[in-house]
Each structure stands twice: as structure tokens, then as C-alpha cells.
Length: 268
Image 1: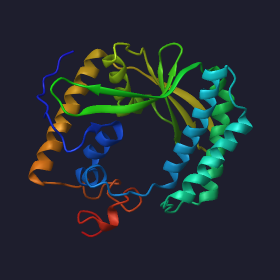
Image 2 (image 1 turned 180 degrees about the vertical axis):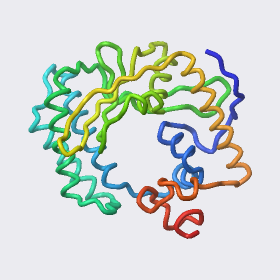
Image 3 (image 1 turned 60 degrees about the vertical axis):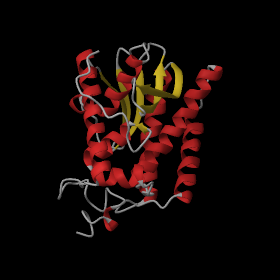
Image 4 (image 1 turned 120 degrees about the vertical axis):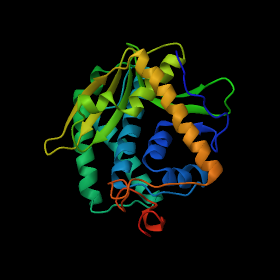
């Protein structure tokens, strides 16, 4: 493994993650508010939908690992509904133009397809296993949770989506790269990463979208993490924080919970 970037020994946070890296690359100011200032950012409905579906299938795969027998489709949908209701009762969800009932129904339909067509063929060995990748001399690390590890050593992640995930998008996805890097760092590289997608189309469907990374790509990823860390450290030291690209879809009331109170967003 070849690392060519000299990383900062300290950061204003103890850990980085996929979501942390993504947010900083998109909008350093949002990253500062969420990870340094710990400001609450309310979720949108699609976030609740994805987490509820993931929690329901995690219950299923956990039962498979423990007893060899998982949950029925009816039980999984009950778990999904319970998680959905609990989250929307606890959190100040930003619905935007989405209608909660219609959104929930679309999630139920896609989850039904996944549990019926895909889940029966999956042989899980771990669910939501935490990883922590550290480097000598650094006071921070890279952490996360592997949604699903399978008997063939593959790593998978469950996604609720509004449209198909293309092979091209999977090939550049930061989550897949991060998780495959973590497995290699643990000394047990995974042969592939799979996105288990539940698609909320007019005719809902589910499919597995595979992707792989070469060792060279994983080496480059480590350099990229260190480059981002350098920028984080510099901005924290200088107080020079920028927002997302003006006019981009990320810098909008619909996609950013900080938009209304941000001098680079809604207050501009």
C-alpha cells in the first residue's frame, strides 16, 4: 500500500466516516455545523424511509444468523412500519413536497419486493459490524458500520432508492470504496461490494448491483482521505469555511437542514 499524502496528526473530530467525508466534500460549512458544532439537522422523509427499511431487514438477517430462520415478509413489513412511526414521532422531519403516507406506501412496496425476491438467497454472517481504521501517528481514525457481510466474503449495503442505481454510479460510490478499504485494512479483503437496492419505481423492484475496486483504487482512496483531512485541519485552524457551490442542488432548502440559517444559503 502506497501513501503519498502527509496527513495532519490531529483533526477537530476524533473520527471520519463515509457521511462525514461526503458532507465535507459537498459543503465544508455544513460539515462544520454538524460535526464540530453538533447542530441538529432534521432528516427528510426519504432518510427516514431508508433507515426504517434497513432496520427491518437487519432484524431479519440477525434472526437468520442466530437461528437459521429469518422473518416472514409480513413480519419485516411490521418492523418497517414500527420503525417508521417511531422515527417520525421523535424527529422533526422535513417533508417538503413529499406526502408521508404515499412515501411510506412506496417504501413498503419496494421492501416487499426485496424481501420476497432477494433476501431468501442471502447468507449473512454479520450485520452492522463496526470497523475502525487507524494509521500510525494519527489521533483520528476512519470508522463505520458494514451493513451486511455474506458467507462468500462479499460486503453489501441496503439502499432504498427512487430510481435505478447504474453500474457507473456504483463504480465511483464512496461508500463502496470506503468499506472495501476497511476490509483490506483488517487483513481480509472482500472480493466485491454489492448494493442491495429497493427501487420505488411505478412498478417497484429490487436488485443487486455489484462493484469492485482494485488495490490501486484503494491506495488512491487513502490519499484522498488524507487530502480531505488536510483541508479540514486548515479550515478549522484558519476559520475559513466555504459553502456548497452556489446554485447547486445541495445548497437548497429541500436538501440542507441548515439552509434557512446559513449566510451562504437562505440568508444570502
